[in-house]
Length: 266
Image (cartoon, rainbow, N blue to C red; front, side):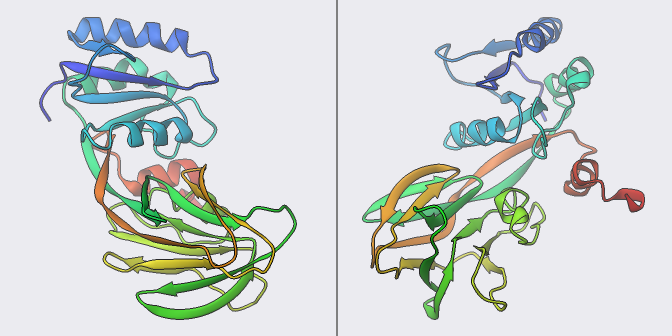
């Protein structure tokens, strides 16, 4: 990649990262890189996130339209989407600023509801709006009606989102590079509901069939709509792709092994 001349900075909203910012400024000064903070203009070559996966999602969504690659320094608990540990700020960012990074194109989701459109980097969720009460979700995939399922909710996740809420509900991990989404029920009231992996061009239509329990609709954890009985949403792979920046030697499997401890029998 060409050397970086301007780098946008996105920071964790609830953690003090001032010491890390000072270290980043020092690396940027040595590398002759201009750092851009909120309100200081656009034109960034890369965005640097100081935070965890939540802050990474915010950065990926924020720079989605501009196509700016986003690289993370982990200040969170898991940090699966980040490329650098805090201890690697000097060495790692010096490499990045010199152009030593590569980008991974990641699919996003679009959710349609009553004429409105929302784009998700991680996942969309339709879930019971009343704690402790099941909802009955009608679901159709690719135009085929698959019936009604009592459950707590349903997740549609991208590959990068498959290691989040989807994974904690028993859904499969999708490797970066797959142009697909995964559909996973949350606490289905059956022994037969299994996750499904769906390709591009296939719509997932969800309908609240509950008589008296509303459903909330979330996009990357933010509620965007409520569904009463008969309310529907459609989820599909979107045209937009987010751009994740990582070091050249890093792959999905090196990150997966480091975060989830799957190497050497751990």
